[in-house]
Each structure stands twice: as structure tokens, then as C-alpha cells.
Amino acid sequence: MGLYDRDYARSTSFGFETARRTEAQTVSFVKETYKLFAASMLAAAVGAYVGIPFAGVVAANYWFIAIPWMLFGMFGLNMVKNKPGINMIALFAFTFASGVIITPLLSHILNMNGGGALVANAFLMTSALFGALSFFAIKTTKDFTSFAKPLMIAFFVIIAFSLINVFFIKSPMIFLVIQAAFLLIISVMVIFDTQNVINGAYETPMDGAIALYLDFFNLFITLLQLFGIFGSKDD
Image (cartoon, rainbow, N blue to C red; front, side, top):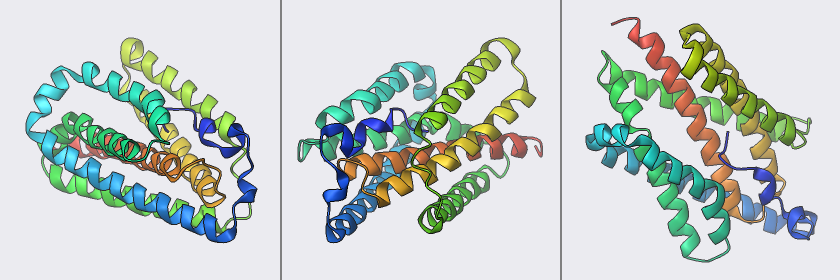
């Protein structure tokens, strides 16, 4: 799930109705959103590639890097999204940094037997799942755009149980259950965000691109951890 409340991006919260967009404007909006999403993916890949040699440094200073990144994702991007030029720099800096932040996990799995295949399989599985969910979101007649509050509540409940498990229970089995539940929540989030993008429910293409990117990012991280857990049993 994303690192911010996506409701802020809905055009109705800014005093105008998205329904006023013409069909041509909506199509243009969707195209621009997916172009930015693809570019964000590329920036993240570059960040991961550049950061891999420094994975140990990132791991040692993880929270000093991750907390500012999360705060910028929640507040900074929203502040500059309507400033041409600066908003693109901010978007790609954010996604580049996300690639750097996951290098400790990537490095750990790459150092396992068959680690390269595990990472590749996790990425391919993420791409396939994301594509299938997006296709479903477009084709289904069910409206998932009203799921914002239930999804947010479920997300924070999962985070709370995850922190309790990490600091107190420390159960590998509970960790697996939490990851499976998180995977389900993010899967529904992909449908939710895709329908919002198609309906033009975001103020700017950048808002939609960030939402889609965070969905893909969280899917990948969750699957990568699961692949890493099951892959380690073969060592």
C-alpha cells in the first residue's frame, strides 16, 4: 500500500468534479499517468543498481534513510506536484531512492543460492499479477473505488500486527501469515487505484503514477520476501 492517504489526490477534494473532463482529456490523462509510472519504474531500477554496492551502508543507516523517504512520500510530493519541472525531479528522486532503500533485501537474496533467479522470478510474478489485476479492474463491472477506508484500516491493522511480531512474538509463521494478508490487501489496492486512474479521480497524472508505483513496489517487496523465505529452505 502507498505511504500516504490517496484521498488527497481525488479531484473532488479540490473543489471541482472530475466528470467535467472530456473523454479525450481522460484518455490523455491515463496515458500520461502510465508514462510516468513506467518512468518511475526505470528510476527505481537505476536506484537499485546504483545502490547494490552500498547495501551494507544502507542497512547500517536504514532508518536514517527510510524515514525521510517516507515523510517525503507522504508530504513532500504533494507539496510540489503542481510545480512543473520540480514535480518531475521530486517524483524520480523519490522512486530512485526507493530502489536504493531495498538494496539490503536485494543483496541478501542475491547472496543466496540461486538468488538471481529468485529476484527475477519475484519481479516477473509481480509484473504478471499487477497486469492481471489491472486488466480485471478495467473489465469488471464492480466498483472498487469505495474501498478506500476499509483498505486503509486493514493496512494499519496489518502494520500493527507486523510490529508486534517483529518486536515481541518473533514468529516466522505469523510473519508468513502477515505477508500473505498484505499481499491480498495490495492486490485489492491495485484494482482500487487502477479504477481511480481510469475514472480520472486523481488531480494530476503524477498522483496516479505514484499510487500505481507504490502498489507495484509493495507487491514486489512482499513477493521478494516470500520467495526469499522459501528459497532459503533449499540452501
